Length: 190
Image 1 (cartoon, rainbow, N blue to C red):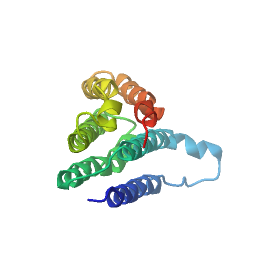
Image 2 (cartoon, one colour):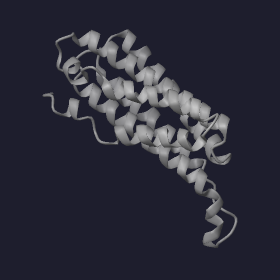
Image 3 (spheres, rainbow, N blue to C red):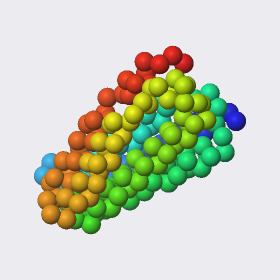
C-alpha cells in the first residue's frame, strides 16, 4: 500500500483541525486594546493547542519518512490518532471559554492522553510492519519521551481537580519536551 495517501489525508485533517480552532477565536466588540484582555485565556488555549497539533504533524511526518510499507491496520491506527486529535478544538474552546476550569482541563488532558496512546499504537504498528531491525525501530527506540508524556498527562488530569495551575504547567511541559523536532528520526537515512 502506498504511504503517500495516508500522509496526504492526515495533513488535510490536521489543517482542518487548526482551521476549526482559529475560527473559534471571536473578535471583540470594541476597538480598544483592553477589549482583548478577556480573550487571553482563549488565545492561550488556542496557542497551546496549535503547538500540540503542529507537534503531531511534525512527528507524524518524521515517522512516515522511515516507513517503506503500510498495511490495513496502519490505516485504522492512523484514523484512531486523527479521531483524538479532531477533538482538540472542542476541548480547546471549552478550556479557553471557561478559564481553564477543572472539567475542561480534565477533558483536555484525557484527549491529549488518548492522542499520545494512539500515536504510540500507530508507531508500534509501523515498527512491526517495517521489522524489529528497521531504521524506524532503531529511531523510535525505547520511547522515553512518550512514556514521560503519558505520565505527565496522567498527573495533569489528577492535578486538575486540586491544583489547576499544575495541570496547565504539565500540558505546557509536555509541549516543550516535544517542541524540538524528533532527532531520533531525523538522524536516520531515508
